[in-house]
Image (cartoon, rainbow, N blue to C red):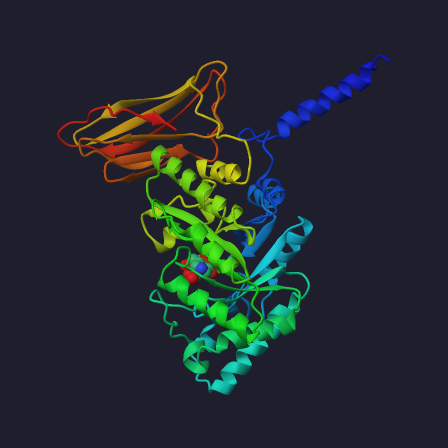
Length: 448
Ligand code: G3I
């Protein structure tokens, strides 16, 4: 039977709509969550509730099947003054997750940080402290009973040398606060998986061994403990070589293991070489989890560099997440995808695109620089980054139509939110004011 004209037109319109709707960078790839599901793992991200709309919400919902509130469920967020509760952001995240068929990790119930000042500054007897902790757990875990897949019940209980951290809880209740907290959480929601979560416990070291011994002892005592969270706030070039071995030894105790807060930070500016190394390291971390059956999955601590804690806490460092500030997937994204069995490769910079640097204006100590990114017919870009080295002491000042950072002699400029796309046969330009003295040679620029 011949297809009717109207049928053909409808079909063509559908194809055109699909082409228009598909994001250019990885149109044909399965989202990370589908790849993870096929490996029987989860892929998660920390989120900020107020941002879950627009592009941020679209990526969070499309790519991830697990969410962790970055701050919204911490004691200081939910009970800022005693007896006054604010569940708005926490509820928003749980509602979003349910609407997008995602699981939620509650984070976190008993910690030394981000507590309300009324709690931190109060004077409490051990009995009062125990009551406060148990009531808090009963209330918060009870509120979300049946809706959360897991809870970070106790967060960061150890010092680097494996001794217990001196906290409100430890000082008041001794190490037993951990068993008490886990027991209270189990009573409040028997279905939620209960975790102890810490950082710098990714490799085999004194701190992770202390955590290992604690979990072994808790299990021997019959205290409810289901899993261990390895936060994995890592530094480029310093992924522990014993990561998989460490995951395996916890798994062998009979608990689940989750990588709960992965990010890999670098000294800014990022360069193509650093981002390529970061891709390899994201791939390695996710592969270590994939290799161990009881490793449930990986959560990144923010999926975009625009929603990462790193630049505030470590000035001069950043670019730690799989998406850049403009929501373009970075090489790290493709590292995660390939570790989860994806066959996608990062779109290479098309050979038909290039960047050219010029100095249209120069005066005694200042100059204006201009960079034009052009693509020949048949090549195009959906985002770009241009890097160069200033060898004669020049310094980048204010830039327009790009985000530029200079560290030492290295300069890196990436597209602004409005000009990432360079069409076939087209070009975009950005400029900046700079300073110079002595000489102002034109650097070699690379497009990556
Ligand atoms: O909400 C206020 C805002 O009103 C104010 O204008 C602004 C000014 O600085 O601060 C905002 O609060 C910040 C909050 O994040 C929300 O953005 C706090 O100052 C800031 O300290 C807080 O940082 C959080 C940090 O925990 C606190 O330790 C990070 O966002 C959060 O990502 C981070 O997460 C922790 C995990 O919970 C545990 N593991 C380590 C990880 C990284 O530190």
